[in-house]
Length: 240
Picture (cartoon, rainbow, N blue to C red):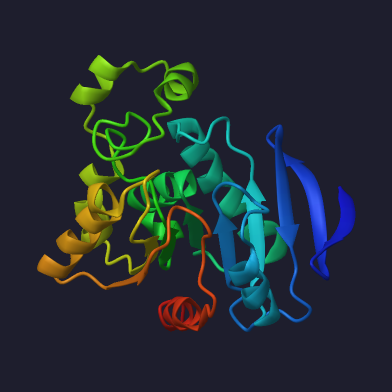
């Protein structure tokens, strides 16, 4: 293990099953030892995570094989969560933080392993792979070649695919997973109406707990809010 500091907090870097892993400690843990699981892009737009560390939450990360969400990455996160609970006494449920492709991973992790999740925070999430990476709708930055190389799935196969996050919404709902979601109304990388809006509409029609916060004249970046209070309050409320 290597110890350092991350934005003023103690950070441990270590190997978990051959994957690079990170655990960041608050100065004083809260009573339940709640924690966030950043699902991709560990250092990207970290203000929310920093604010939660100040509130006594831990922050964890384990490296993915690819940002396009392989089952083995989800399974590794399940084992990682168990390891953190057993080794560091962290709460049995985490709050995945999923930005962009991290939202793809966070939502599918929550659907596959709801027993590990209190709530999820999605930010400009990829929920429909035909939108991103395929670029079959409004998205103007198709990343299909990267997706093919990462998953071995071509466009014809993807069009038959029924494992998109939007195909898993019923599992999130059945397991009563609360969702807070932030998006830019001018996102042309992961258009909201092709991705997050589908989840928002489904949850609202079927009685799910969801808070969707739009940012006017905002594209895919930046993630987060100028004032993260609504996200913080939602996460704290549904992590008790």
